[in-house]
Image (cartoon, rainbow, N blue to C red):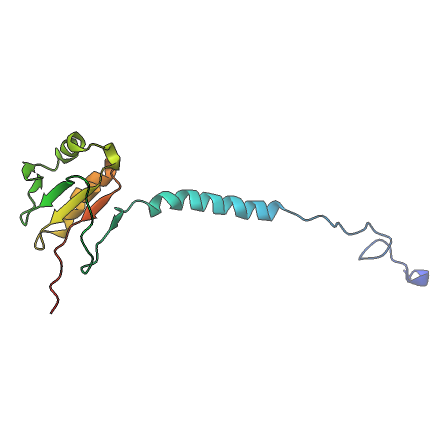
Length: 147
């Protein structure tokens, strides 16, 4: 076994006599990554909107101009509910609001929660209204007295 003359190789290793390198881009790994990202975003997107969408008013904000009397849900300190002064249970809340809503689920709703009422009771009310399709839910507060 001797070396081949002229430094030629016997087909092993890299040499100029072999096939030229492939100059195509292999997109299979990129497609795999994009499909995984697509699945992650499809699963994560609904989870990001599961909360109750509300905008808490600033304590120094001015009163909003109102064209007509809004629907107001009040949560008493003991958790009792009323709509515009009429007592209602949590089970009948959505039905009662639907009966009063002129614009359907586009109606603006206000929740008045007593400062001593349980946070969970107020969130139950807002969650029930949000699950019924109402997206414009606001919280009513008193203006803070400036010293």
